[in-house]
Image (tube, rainbow, N blue to C red; front, side, top):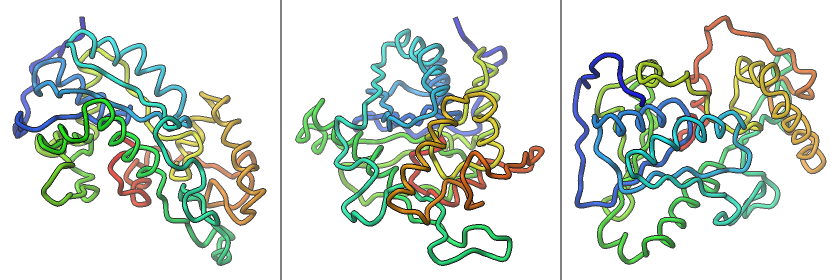
Amino acid sequence: MPGFTKNFIPQKNFNYRPERFNVLSSGGGTQSNAIICLIHAGVLPKPDIIVMSDTEREASNVFEYQRQYIAPLCEEMGVEYHIIPKSKYATYDLIGSDEDTPLPGYFTEYEGRDIRGQCAGKQPAFCSIKWKTEVIHRFLNERFGEKYLTERGVDTWLGISIEEAHRRAKFPPGKWQRRYPLIEMMMTKQMAIQCVEDYGLPTPPASLCWMCPNRDDDLWLFMKNNVPEDFARACAHEKEIQKLWPHLWLTKYGVPLAEAPLKPSGGKNTQMDLIQFCDSGQCFV
């Protein structure tokens, strides 16, 4: 049975509100898995339910980790864990209400290229809202009743760590409220990684879609070398989107992904480099 090899004492406690309906919205990545370990260990209280929206483009190693290590923890502590298929609840897939613009934030050469020959712009991204936030809200309303959740109010826990505090989104008082256990406990992403490892689990993989244009070179190279089937999907995806939008690319280099001059950073890059393009709070956690 997993457990901390040394006592884990948080710097601060999480202000749990049991009168509200508490939902851990898992992104399937480092910080979300750390929260689940902390719940299993009794450091954090049990939420009413744990949910993860399957964008149906999530990196395959993320789900392998969830099935092998995280689902058994949830079962042991008696908390329901639902992985929700996006296609069952989402209104849109790749194309939103504006049929001229896809939802992900692809790199674009529509306004030209910079002095390095790279794409000069990047599309705004709406995929997190449409594929995750709205999917989870609709699932919860269907499962527990919209009236019940409205009367009680919902606290959605998100795995944003302290160095990402600028990604917090405050909702007005009412039904849907966001909570950030790791920020309240003063935990960084590196502390979250160490927490999972110290709990006896392997280092969790980064959580983001295999076609996410917010990947840095390190993450593209990792996928190319370790999950080649996902890299092949991404290459095929780029070719498909260019049939409608020939100015869009998955990387800043503005060349086919298979030919992109990807370079390892030697540890200089961090996920902080990615999240400047996505402040939804639902991704990379």
